[in-house]
Every structure is written in structure tokens, then in C-alpha cells.
Image (tube, rainbow, N blue to C red; front, side, top):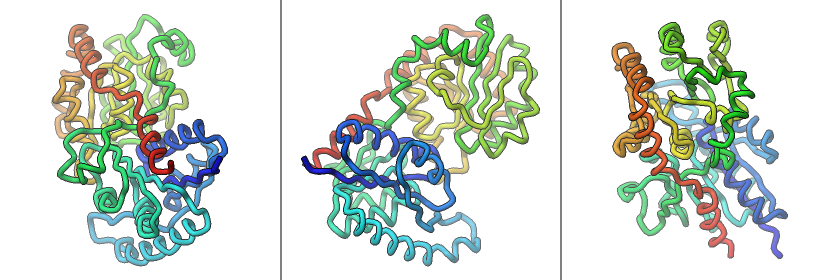
Amino acid sequence: MKQYRFILSGGGTGGHIYPAIAIANELKSRFPDAEFLFVGANDKMEMQKVPQAGYKIKGLWIAGLQRRLTFDNTLFPIKLITSLFKSRTIIREFKPDVVIGTGGFASGPLLQVAAITGIPTVIQEQNSYPGITNKLLSKKAKKICVAYENLERFFPRDKMILTGNPVRQDLIDIESKRAEAIQYFKLDPNKKTLLVLGGSLGARRLNQLIEKELPKILSQNVQVIWQCGKLYLEDYKKDAAAHVQVSAFIERMDLVYAAADIIISRAGASSVSELCIVGKPVIFIPSPNVAEDHQTKNAQSVVDRKGAIMLKETELDSEFMLVFEALLNDKGKQDQLRENIKQLAMPEATKKIVDEIVKLIR
């Protein structure tokens, strides 16, 4: 049997890295002898997270264009040319059967070179509004696996397959883990648990909000698990107290979701997909600082189906406590959100994406 070789590229944030790792894991389970190589951007978090997951990675000297005029922008053409040459060397030496891109700057030059040299490329687009890299790459891609419907205005219809976003498989049945979760996090079973998720790096505005409203939240007989992100741990670990756990990163996401009664989260594509599977009442607070306002569009697609509540950052000071208290005290509303968000879940996403990759190599 042929030994297949796969290159995966995606990074910059956990939202691009974890889908790539999930796809690699599923490919590995089907082709145990396959060889894998990841390609990321130098100095970005994939250079740590991918080796931790057991895969080799090479870095490109690449970064995105800043929206304002900066010195880094003047270097962009040089970085791009350098990355294209390095991508060519990587592809020539590794000889992949398929190259898979999950978004992020590094996937641009790599998939472009792969497509030009005749190697099949697959794009996995996580967002309801695609980024510029994937829009450019879609012209030469063989398959585009999407998580949302109605993306025909961005991608060729005949290449698109609705698969959903890859998520951790241990999230599929969290209801059975609640007792274990309460014990693991040493929670009070008689209190409601609020889970705050700011993403892998953290979210400044979200953290500021929680710090400001913490006394009022705790007065509602609520305990808090607050993932503030690695950029902000030093600022907020002082807020840890009885019934408040503050951490940069949560290893056991399955257990923390099992323990949570209400979740406050950013609306990155991977987070939204996970929360649909988890099926808990969610208040989305999208980041306004991402390209093309992706997160608002991701959250809106769930809100439109009555599966979540969304608050914009500009509404937090006046609206947050009103919305949070109303949700906390309305079991009917909580049940409605749970039911509706679960309807949007696509738990088979990783398998479907890998099915499409396998069609290209057979």
C-alpha cells in the first residue's frame, strides 16, 4: 500500500491550528503509515502547539498586511517572495500527495506553490465570511470545505462542500462528564458556573468587563471559571479568589464545558462550532478587531437561528449585567438556547473533510 504524504498549513491563532491538527489526527487514524508535515509562520503559536500534538513543523518568514502604515508592511513583499521560494523547496523535498490549508498567512504561499506545481490543494474555511488568503487560493483549489451555507459569492459553487468545522472529538458527549468536571475543577455543585472564554491569546475588552462586573456576578450565587488568555494572565491572576478560577489556558476543554451552565465567549469560528456541539446557553461578545468583522458574522449566524445571545463591545457597559441576570434567572430561555444551538452542530465535520481529501488521492 502506498505511503501517503500530507502537508497541512494553518496558524496565527488556535482557530486555524486546532482544525489542522484535528484533520491530521483523522488522516493518521486512516493511514497509520502516512507522513505529515505542518508549515506555519515563524514566531506564531503553531510553532509550539503543533510539536506538542506530535507533528513536525517548518516555519515561513511571513506575516499579514497591517491595516495601518507600518514598517512591517514595507517588508511584506520581501517576506512573500522569501516564503514562496521556501515553500517551493519544502514541497520539492517532501513530495506531498495533498496540501491542506486551514487559513492564516503561512497557508497562502504554500498552497499557491502546491497548486502551481500540480499538487491537489484543499481549503478548509472556518468562517461565515472568508478571509482574503482563502478567497485568493480558492481559484486553484480542488476542494473547499466550508462551515456555513451561502458562500457562493466568495467561492466557486462546484468546489464547495458543506462539512462544518473540525472540533475536538471529546466534546461529543459532555453531559455524562458533569460529575467528573465538578470534581476536577473543585466546584460547588449548588452554585451555577459561568465560563468565560477569551480565546487562546486572550481578549482585553472581555477581561476588563469581567473584572469590573465580578462582584455583581458573584452576588448572584455564581462561580466563575475565567480563561483570560496568555497575554493577560499577569494582569488578572490577582482576581482569583473563592469561587473564581483564573487561567491562561484550559487543558480539559471537555470538562470545563461539562461544568458550565452559562458561557461567555468570543465568536471565532472554531469556538462557535464547538459551542454548537456543547449545547449550552451562550452570550457571544465578538471581537471587532478581526479582518472583515468575521466574528460578528459568525455569531450573527447563530443568533439568527435563536441559538445564542450577542452583545457588541459598545453595548457592554450599559447592557451586560441586564442581559446576564435575565438569562441566569430564565430557565425557559436557557432551554430554548440549548435546543436551538444544538441544531446547528456538525459533529461529523472532521470525517467529512478527510473523506474529501481521500477522494483526491485515490
